Amino acid sequence: MTDPHSPQHLPTRTADVGGIPIQRAIPQRALRKVGAWCFLDHAGPADPEPPGMQVGPHPHIGLQTFTWMIRGEVLHRDSLGNTRIIRPGQVNLMTAGHGIAHSEESQTPSHIHAAQLWIALPDSNRNGPARFQHYPELPQTTAGDFTATVLAGEALGLHSPAEVHTPLMGVDLFAAGTASPARVRLPLRTDFEHAVLSLEGRVGVEGQDLPMEELLYLPPGTESVEIEAAPGSRLLVIGGEPLDEPILLWWNFVARTGEEIAEARAQWEAEALPGHAGVRRFGPPLDSPLRPLHAPSLEGTVLRASR
Ligand code: MN
Image (cartoon, rainbow, N blue to C red):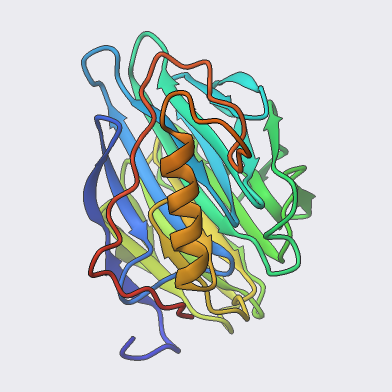
């Protein structure tokens, strides 16, 4: 980063996940994580042809997947036996720990708008048992002219019930008014770093436009942020205590060493084969109509943990 002490506009990049166009905001070269948030995909808003987003069974280790559904419905299945449709206004939190597998299937109609984030688990929790939690309702309050939903951690005097393992926060701000732009000066914790991502409409931060293709990074020490948005706009603010551990993110895994990644990859590739017998790190095969996803090759890849 050029100057780690001032706000930075960082470009997101376009990718495809399960047939849906997404904007990947982190990780990127200039910013690996925000607190323990180590991955942020903004999916849609998109109106794909049916069947919409279809992500076959795939594994995770060392992280929590955090899904915030804005529009659309997605069926989650996992190797703990959970089957759950997530609907607008709800959060799915899947703690991978030592290992879990899941699939995600858009329901009909296939319209989708969501944010999917990953939270790196700290060393003390990353090899623990897998878990899945569904939060049908998150606490809401008013912040200036916005409706604020506290997704994770504590903000605006409210606590999210989502179970996380490091100090972090996440808030969805929706400009609910119909006439004039919504405004708020949002107080921030100075021991946290933060990032702001526009999810819909027209958003400005500190008097400057924040296009949907940019993430605004706010370093630790930032006391507050001035946000303005046109009626109907929506944005996401995430933050957390800078993570004091180098992490290694590869494919769907968060680990510390290349050996851990290679081992998890080999185990998944073996377990994804039909008729695999013996120990299953990622649990029994899912009852999903979709084929398991294969991990990319590791050949020629140098895996190194970074901050
Ligand atoms: Mn996943």
